Amino acid sequence: MAFIICVAALIIMMFVFTQMLLSFSNNSSAAVESVDATVVEKKQGIYTHMQSEAHVPWFRVVFEMTDGSLMEFQMQQGDFRELEKGDRGMLTYQGNRYICYQKYKFKSEAQEEENVK
Image (cartoon, rainbow, N blue to C red; front, side):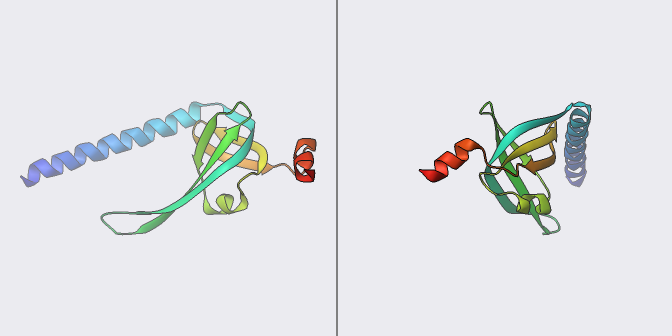
């Protein structure tokens, strides 16, 4: 019985490793893209590792592109803290890997008109 459990665990670990390797490979071969985007949602939580019971925080941000499509990226805590819902800027990414986000430092005329109303 223990042998079967060990073999099953080994197969699962190989599958997870293969998926991680494929994801890394796909991201690395994808073109780096920069697009106008708005921060629409911020998510954070804590992942608890079952075996070690370690608590690992995670941070995700959802961006809306100018064409209306949504993209969600996992990022580091420092980048996460710098972003606020409604920020507009230039999102740079490669595949599903977040690279950076540069907020625009000016308000568009449309935003200024909305604030006057």
